[in-house]
Amino acid sequence: MATEELVQLANGLSCSMPANSPLAKLLRSQRTWVGPDAKERQRLLNGAKSVAIVGMSDKQQRSSYFVGTYLLQSSKYKVYFVNPMIKGEILGQPVYPDLKSLPEVPDIIDVFRKGSDIPGVIDEILEIGSPIVWVQLGIYNEDAARYGESKGLKVVMDRCIKIEHARFDGGLHLLGFDTGVISAKRHAR
Image (cartoon, rainbow, N blue to C red):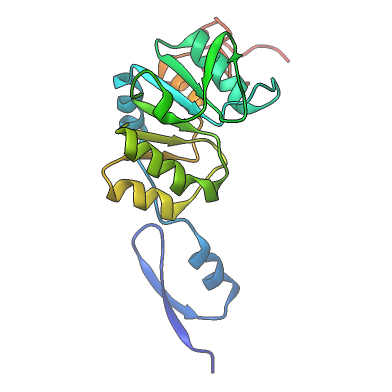
């Protein structure tokens, strides 16, 4: 007879099922950390005056380059780029080797680093005193999120700051950019 196990579901409920069942394994692997809801993310973005992008790339095809371009052109933020491997400028902005080198403490640190690097980045953020870490879409480290929150940081993870900003600022189009057209009419295909 298979041993039963109590599995906690993301909605707060729990159920009993065979411990070796595929569903039990899947449910144990599900994310349990959620992060700020949409209204809180909007409040964080609206309250910020500056953003530093950690892991900024000088390659135009990289998402950090696209986000940096968007923030410079379509937001009110003072934008800083951080990448120890790049000397000089990207998009006419200086590139800093680390967060400590920035001329001010940014309100939001937007992170383009792999999930396993996030705890170290959070430690750097805590050293400079920035209040918000925003980890980009596709990057997730639940332990790092919980660690950051335990140290007083607001943590947003696995969300694109460009998409969220455009969403709340009225400039989001299906393709992710502002078309300049506001209409409730469907367009013929």
